[in-house]
Length: 460
Ligand SMILES: *Cc1c(COP(=O)(O)O)cnc(C)c1O
Image 1 (cartoon, protein in one colour):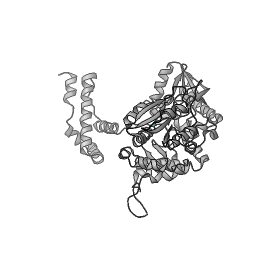
Image 2: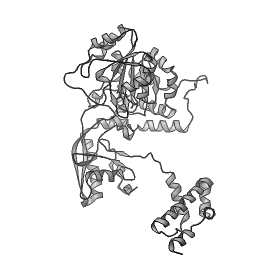
Image 3: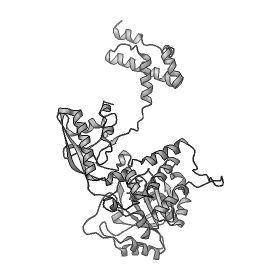
């Protein structure tokens, strides 16, 4: 008999592993099914190692079984450090919530709440009213409702207001947002008929006027979130379009995308139309995201005239698109911060990061550079460079925001290998390679000593 056969023969049976005192203790914590499965997996792994590598039969079975169980409990949704140069990165889960929103969401998750229950009379309540008053107060709208995300908000509004009828959109605004949101396709799925007007670069008020007919249900404006058309361009002012629509008795909807609640100009950024301005200029329905510039949880907010909001709320699809209690709690907490805009600008990470002064960003970069130098020592050249970053998720398109990055040149790894190395940390660090240089953008860095925890830089 050769060594392999001896090793295979000495592999224990599942039952004999379960009879070991240490394994029996595991059963108390994890239950019989889980530990039996883990024991089986441990034996299978040992068998494979013997056959493939000529390994010997392991002795420390309880420890191996503990590891198998632990591996099963490891989350696949992992915390990553976003130093990508995109402040609100859709692929990295967009907004980091304000502490107040985190606490509110966790509390709502852990307890029962008055989600659809009136604490006044013990009867049924309406989940929308929980945040409606706040949205109304912050936007000047008559009423508001909340769904899962802004794509759902657009779908629901179109389906309610224009099903089987014509919706007029400028050819310059037939947008595609990342992740397969294409306005013409959403319109088709909502059951309304798209009537395109104007051209890619120029659409006049008269184009809208000519297109409006008896079967027109809606005029839709969409924020060209992720691109800009420059040069020979024109489009009517929102106020002009609103006057035209109201003369014809047709509602005007504006899909704002980002939906700033405060003037970004006050934060030293280029201005975006705020929801309040859009409504005061005559839009009857405004849709926007909860997790873009607003900096809250993923949600789609529909604000506007009460008669339309009531119809939207009554649509059976609303039930399929509604948010849960944790989202509503996080949204409420985020919106409450906006009552005091200066507090919102400091407490909401998206706003704080976008508006930070350059001296602070550079200071972060210096601190981070020192830590990274300390780790790589002579293996890498680590410098602080002036850089530019983007707001991301379709906000402030093509606007360069000044920033500072830590740039790393490694003697043994090329920039892409370096990017992969940082992604491979226990807490993955997401940077970017630009012009042959690996960079970690510091506009979104809060605490280098904690976030760049080199003690946790072992392989995962
Ligand atoms: C981002 C965006 C959407 C989609 O919003 P989500 O919250 O990602 O669903 C729709 N319209 C516009 C104009 C956008 O910018």
